[in-house]
Image 1 (cartoon, rainbow, N blue to C red):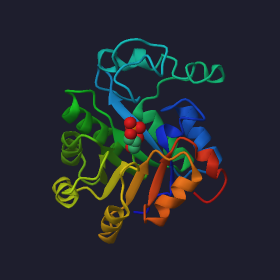
Image 2: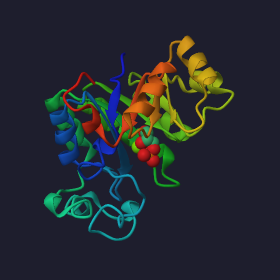
Image 3: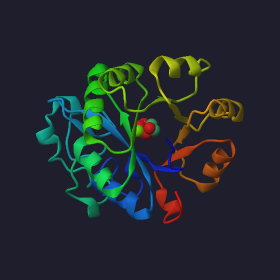
Image 4: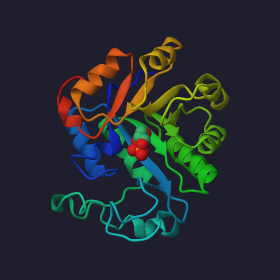
Amino acid sequence: MGYPRIIAHRCGGALAPENTLAGLRLAARLGCRGVEFDAMLAADGVPVLIHDETLERTTSGQGRVADMDSARLIRLDAGIRHHAAFAVEPVPTLDAALQLCAALGLWANVEIKPAVGHEAATGRVVARHAAAGGGRLVLSSFSETALRAAAAEAPQLPRALLVEVIPADWRERLAGLGAMALHCSARGLTAGVAAAVRAEGFPLACYTINRRDEAERLFAMGVSAVFSDRPDLWALEEM
Ligand code: G3P
Ligand code: MG
């Protein structure tokens, strides 16, 4: 499965509120073929799009995502802290996001983002919803526990291991998880490691790249894709 070169990080979070349907729409409008977003469980076990375990930074709510039912979460304002123009933008459910991706023809990287202590449940539930939603997608997570649970729930879905720095034993880890790709921070990525990953045929995607020259440097190293908060830098080009 080929990766889009430019993936709108958190749905393109510099241009629209992160992890929202407004972000997905804007990313598609700019010509993005791929988007990334973070999926976490609400208190009632429904997966919603949000990055932090707490609500304050990105929403009008307070407290922990894991303590609030999805019915309340989706009524919070996830747009107002970005800009008044996005007021009353809701916290989306994962189902709603996947449905919109399918309608817009967007490839999706669903990052499984468990609250601490909820790793296995989050992996299992996110995989179940992703499998039911259909569409072209890859699951990823920093949590290997979550990835294992996702594999057990929906083994047919492709999975990527997400790491800050690629570990020396990356081959064994990918094999153990049955993962087909590596996602890593661009910081600390060396040309040698990038070449080794690509030589073995694994897609390699790097976060978070908000300059074109940095993306070009990574592509020249063989990196397959970059996550960017600024997909407008490539607007209406072949992404
Ligand atoms: O999935 C790539 C990237 O989103 C990982 O970092 O913290 O933005 O979810 P974070
Ligand atoms: Mg993420």
